[in-house]
Image (cartoon, rainbow, N blue to C red; front, side, top):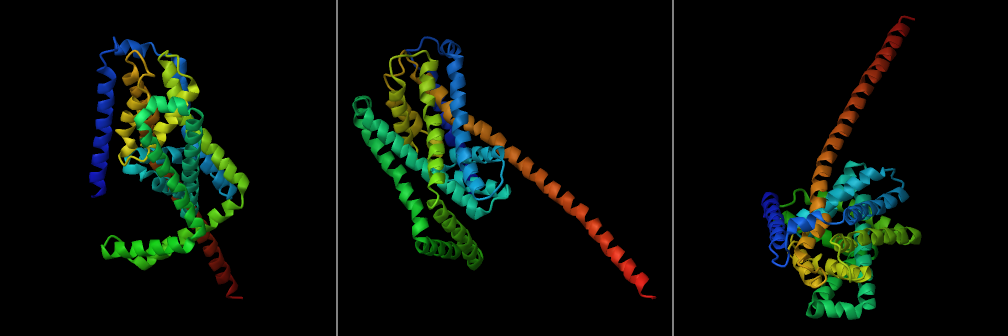
Length: 371
């Protein structure tokens, strides 16, 4: 399947998910007037939702920024926030969020970060995020086990499977730090296979490039293991980032003026929904997120507000990332073009100076010859 067709299918899935959410939001017979309900939402809690959205992106960026600064790369935080937003944008439009990390590495490369260190920074964020969401959701599920079993009932299997899949990524990725030779052999076999399928040209050069990246990645991970302070900092940023995202359900609940369910129980269900739906292979986990929300929060959003709550919650946890991410991608293209033009201009300015120096030397030599 070519990239153009994948893009079309991803766009169709996103449009379909938006359509379904809107239909669900406005077709609930229990709700008297959906538009009046939206207009009566508490603006303070809606501002809190926007803060949750921003904290998710900012703390994620701060994790990457902190690691790169510790490695001696002086990159500005706003640039890294842009990288994080680009990664979240591509994660939400590609199946299984497969495009997010590669695009972040590419954006960091454009900002002057070597691919090896960019890959390491993105991988560290991925591993810490997976570990922390598993830890947070497990602790909350144990503390509120009676409430969780009562609310989810037979749907607990989805949370258990999701927890296992999310946690499995942690040992698989960290394996590269301790079994470097295994990863090297796997990469060489994959490149050889792609070469036979005529998907890769000059496999020797590709293996050489991959080996260079793996060496940098391996060295960086080993160095990180010997820096427990940096690991704790990365885990802290992951916890703050993920709590920003999962706390959005608490603000959504109170924005509708609802009361009765404590914030910690809402947060528990939100975390379990995250691990249950995040492994779904559709863009933005579409379908699983919407269906999971209606199932997990059934009876909590009363008076027929669950459909509208789904629409508001999905906007701040998904659609807003698409909107802002699209503009961030365009802004990066302009920024890269501007930087390229600046470099060309600086290079052009250096050439006349060098030429003038060379001409001066020639004149000196010519003057010296008659003597």
